[in-house]
Structure formats: C-alpha cells, structure tokens
Length: 255
Image (tube, rainbow, N blue to C red; front, side, top):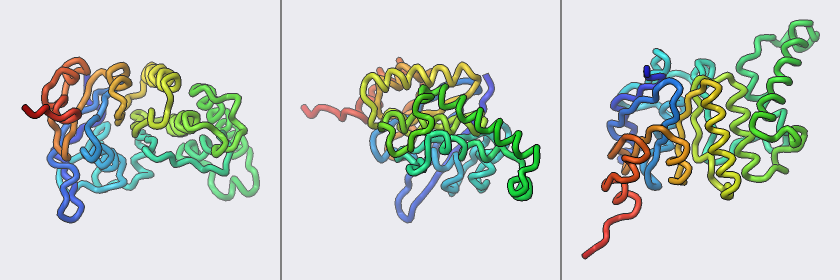
C-alpha cells in the first residue's frame, strides 16, 4: 500500500524547547493511523506541521507527492488535507449547515461578479454546495439539527459537525485532533462507527486521541510519541503490549 502522507525527520523548536524531534512515519492510502502519546508528547504540534499551521525547522512532509513544508494552509486544504481541532473551532452564531458551507467554500469557483449579479453558474454552484452541505450533515447524523445554531448543539454534536465541515472540502486525508474529547460512551461508540464509514468512502484518516479504547478499535496502525520523539510504531495489539508505551502512559512501579 503506497503512502499518501510521508513525514520524514521532522523537527520543531520553540525557543529552547524541542516540541518534535526527528519524527518520521507514513500514512498509507486508505488507512486509519493513530498518533498517540501522553500530554505534551508533541502530537498536536506534529499535526500543525502537516497542515501548515507551523513550519518545520528540519525535515520534510510530503502529501500525494507534494512538499508541504512552507506551503500556505489554504493550499494544503485544496490539495486534499482537512482537519478538525482539539479545541472546537466552529462559527457558533451560524447554523450547522452554514458551518459546513464554510468548508465547501474552498471548492467553489464563482467569483465576486457572479455572486453580485446572480449569474446562472453561480446559482447552480450555490445549490450544489447547499446540497453537499446537507448530505455531509446527514452523513454524520445531524440532519435534524441542520438549521440549529452551532452554539446550541451538544459537545458531541459539535464534534461531529466539525467532521462534516472537514468532509465538505473533498479531502483525501482527514486529520482528527482528539475527536472523542468531551464525548460520553455512547457518542464515542458512534464516532468509531463514523470513522469506519469515512474510511469506506476511500478517505484516509490520521487521528490523535487519548481514549486508548477508541484507538484500539478504530486504528489499523499506531505511532507513539513521548517528549517529542517516536518511541514505538505498529499494530494496535503490538502497541498495547509494548513496555515502552506502557511505561510512557503509566510509569513504572518503584520497588
């Protein structure tokens, strides 16, 4: 299976702090890969290096043959990389469907003139964008909440709305940053099922998550970071049994 995303020897420093140190891993086309580690391990920094929010001090990030280091975030989205955020970033005063439409904007072509004079091409594009937004809202299970303001949705529903917005960008790769954060057990179960359905659409998934149960159920391959360095990589079963990973999460018992 060929790699859709290749991270090679990536390093990021903030002043005297090395947040990510010489990290390498691949995300194969059509896979679900988990990136895990204790708090402060460098997981979100690694995501931000992939999505262009940060620029790597050293190393390379390649997506579908394109070098991403130094590329603007909007260009990375157009290449087919979408993400959600650890801290929800929805437009709280807009409806659910308006939030998803904001994600669809990167795929629309009508210019300012078309919008002002309501040219037929612009009207068709608007209708198609609205239908796509509604389709994605239905896909994540929020069809009955489409016209509700984002601020009135439960925390779990806001998480799913962020995923719908990401899907509206036509991604090849979706990066999920702590998608189960704040979810109850039932919502987490629904999220596992949703992740599987996203994969069934041919979309590759890279996932940061603290919920080890979710990682073990959802992911096919797991990369483990600690203090900004990769300490393990392999199948969920191998990772769960790796003494270095157990120590990183639980510590060692003093004798």
